[in-house]
Image 1 (cartoon, rainbow, N blue to C red):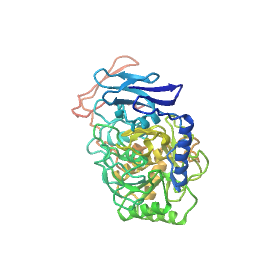
Image 2: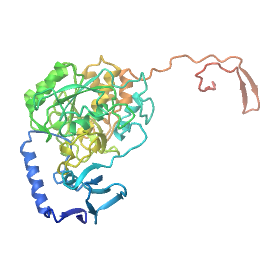
Image 3: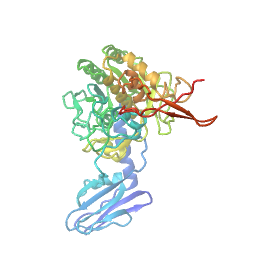
Image 4: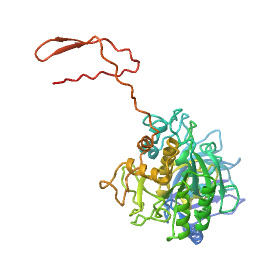
Length: 472
């Protein structure tokens, strides 16, 4: 038996199985196009309030590195595939293949197993560029590029963050210890398990654990709550989202993070956010991914903090909305965070082909939990702050971008965790010990331009340097 996978150019033209005991199977490009159009139409028909994570309407072919093991007795001819390894003692290969071929091979009768080629390294957390850019690690790690929480530093402890989204993979090794509960308003039960992937990605940005593996979030010791208000396709009803806000109020949340948007002004939705704000909850929401000068609801409501996205060059992301309600911005391009450890909607090629466990995503959806995490650090430093006070701290400590002062593109600028926590009163207290007196001071004139000073050595253990001033 011979299995031949033929590749032409950048995309698969057919997958042909040649065997005397099995019929020939082919999937032509036109058939795949019809399949994709049908699936895409089914997604659009269920949309009501859609999540704002950016997805292309005509996704480009994505490739992944995969390890493919074949069943005993299968003779493999892999002409045209980008082979990384052909194993001699195992009946299998490692190869770079299109995501849609990966999904087909998961169900192929001749494949015993297929898995992504995961990266392994020394055991330490990965510091995403966005978490680094807002200086979160300087708060809990005490230094630039730190990847470990220093005991006693502000780290999000004691703060409850409700993530209103598609749910959370609460079994993920980077989330299981910070996950504290939640509710599923889509299925009306107490199991808010993520079937999409978007909510898990947002959760990791907020509070992925300091556990020596994977990634680390903005506030790695905050408590996260999964409030599932969007279904597995990433859409949901306004009524479910309002119910989620209602739940957050009843359960004493400190922060609400909403990476979702759509629809027009809704009085009940606006009222729900007002109630949360009055109850002491800081509400953070995504500005939207349409690349236009209109902020999406719910971010446009008065008592929600509207968050835009920037790239690593501190430019407004080309997809980020902007407008008069824009309050702050945060990193939102190629953000590396947690993904469910099991198969979900976003793993399929027609939904982007994202990896399990960890992957990069872009959108104001990613910028929003960055800000929610910074808010968690602020409240961890000073739990007595009110939502208006937290908002004011964000305004005054953000790094100004674009035109001087507030502008409709960057708002007050990029949030900065270190400056915000210091302003909240939770930074390293300044050294108020007065300098020791200099004793035994003698002078010796060496020339008309030189003088020699001598004094007794100081015995302070933390002495760093001496300052010598000339008076007159």
